[in-house]
Length: 354
Ligand code: G3I
Image (cartoon, rainbow, N blue to C red; front, side, top):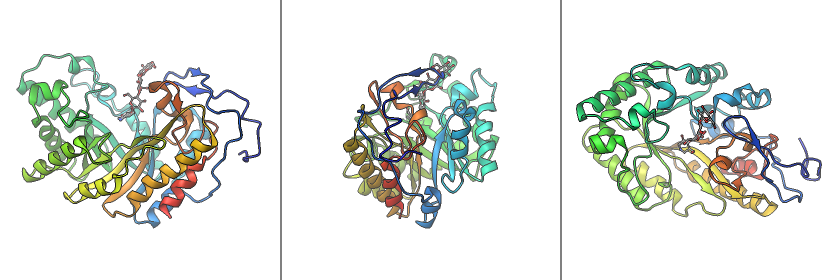
């Protein structure tokens, strides 16, 4: 680990690894010394002491060949929960109709179980990462109902998970329904079909709806709250709402805490499910310090509300973050840098949990 006075790493280009293992040489730092995190406290232990169920991280199967990464991920005092970032999605588990493969997901589950960590299943029904037989299919309502029921039964029943993101990202930014194959054929009822199937398959898993840009109040958050309200009124099983929390440095919504409370007031638990806070590169000390403040703000909002049960970061190291692959010129979103050095963001999380 290098101290804030160690310049040896700072002249090197930052290698951002893509999903296929290739690297790009985006310059992630400004060349000036960047501050580091200094706390030695462990995040999951702190979360438990604060009354939370877990502090966790997403992971992905290709990263599990990196021993330094796996050692850190396997520290159950640091991470009490893991979410597979890709390997339980539809295009991984049911690439051909009725033919299920759990190899990738099972690898993550086995690691979590060996470490005594909870697993969040991610996800059953989502418009993205669908095999073409689903996204491009022409179905009657009866046919697609059967397809959703089968998929949402087989996945959650495969092995125990603490929770499942049963429906992911159902809404557009303005709160209207996203017009994917599920909505187009089944209308909003696809959510009920999916939740009922998941409940039948796994009576004990917490069933979640999960989305982004519902962290602060606004049309999309209101749409999700209205959906939860109507599901509850109809007796449909719904246990939780996941706030993904893919934020930008300096832009954490000021209504975050009151909005989390608004979800909890509907009788569901809330989890922060995919937290990361990205910046426009190169990283600077000022950006790192603002990021520390922002992580603190998010964690503190969850900490003070007992109905906010845990926080998952969308991987813990910039080495494997999804951000640079999606947002050109942005990155450095995680609490550990590409060299597994803690950033000030880490101390922000510690302060938020303490
Ligand atoms: O599977 C192919 C592989 O065959 C191919 O060789 C490789 C080439 O790049 O691509 C592989 O697919 C990639 C996939 O991850 C699995 O590695 C896709 O290109 C890549 O786009 C995909 O990115 C994932 C993204 O979801 C897709 O939308 C990220 O890793 C994953 O972190 C991200 O996670 C989502 C959550 O599920 C939902 N919320 C937003 C979050 C961030 O986008």
